[in-house]
Image (cartoon, rainbow, N blue to C red; front, side, top):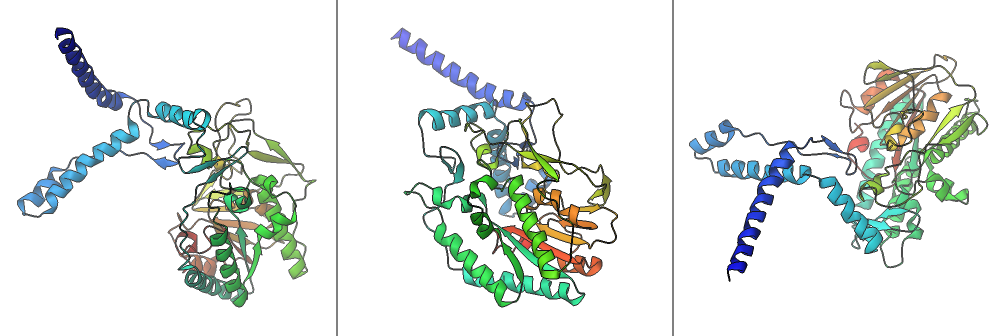
Amino acid sequence: MKIKNVFNILVIIGFCIVIFLVPVLTKLEPHSETSIFENRKLAEPPVFSFETIFKNKEENAPSWNKALRKYMSSWDTYFSDHIVQRDKFLKLKNLIDINILKRPVVNDVVIQKDFLVPFNSYAADTSNIEGNAIKIAGRLSTLNELVKSYGGKFIYIGVPEQYSMFRDLYPKYLNNNDELLSLIESCFFSELEARGIDYINMRTEFYKTGDYKYYYSKTDHHYNLMGAFLTYQILIHKINADSNINIPMLTDGDIEFIQLNNPFYGSRNRKLYNRYDSNDKLYYYTEKNPIEFRRENNGTWVPPFVFNLPDANDETTPVTYNIYMSGDIAETIIQTKRDNLPNALLFGDSFTNPFETFLFHSFNETRSLDLRHYTKNTILNYIEEFKPEYVFCMRDDTAYLSLSGNGDIK
């Protein structure tokens, strides 16, 4: 009986020590502001405000206790994001799930032998597809008419998301969203055609190559640098063929693709804390005859580079898709001082980043906007101010019908 009591006391003491030490060690351990694995900003320590809470209490406002509860729950979120050794525990959990338990789906990521794709809900909502296709096509039509009014040309560039291109490779028992994606594509491009809006559907172009997997990442939702290069070449071919002009275009002989040996933290593998074993790598390129250019980010001149690479002798630092153009930037301007060439404006999400590394070679001045971050002006007013001869919108097929961000055209 005494031994049992001693054991219970030791358990209680041990439990209390853990309960006490975990928050203390969590608070003392150096914290990161962001998580590279989760691609998000981590919670900050909540700030207690006597004024907010007790002023409401004195005014007999029922929200005072709600504010107090929100403050206390914020500590739960903070400790959850920063608990001591959190990343190591999560890495271990994912390692066990993938390699020992052999779970087919981990953290909403479908584990395949050579690639990763997202888990899709079996209930796909198709109720607003036609209506949203009409709305976004109407907005693009307004933009198209504006560009045409001063003699410019607008082209929409549709690029499939990785899982959209890989939809036929899903296990049969999982939903690959083929019906939903096909309906979105059909409705959207039909509406563009009805309004006379020129476009490129890269899904059909990638299929034409006979090896669409060559152009996509295995562990990230984007296309790879070779996919961006093919998209660029098809665009310039189209411009030259439709307009009977000769805008210069990079060819296969002008550049050399080089593989980065650094670990690649693809967006899907990051959700698994990079525990999925893959030979997926990022690429950059070198040029035989590079052109001089000036680059401006958000109104500030920056060094003229398009690849944000690790040190040449460093093959251990992890890299992400942000090596292209240094990631998503509100406004980027590249000037090549070739006044004989037209000016261009590109707007869209992160699929534009590797594409931009090629696009500026074909124009005098190339502007790029990401309307998720650019708030100084509307896209229509921006076009009206600078009147670029060519305007391109690039979006992936999961965002064709999005009316926010780069779909917020006004």
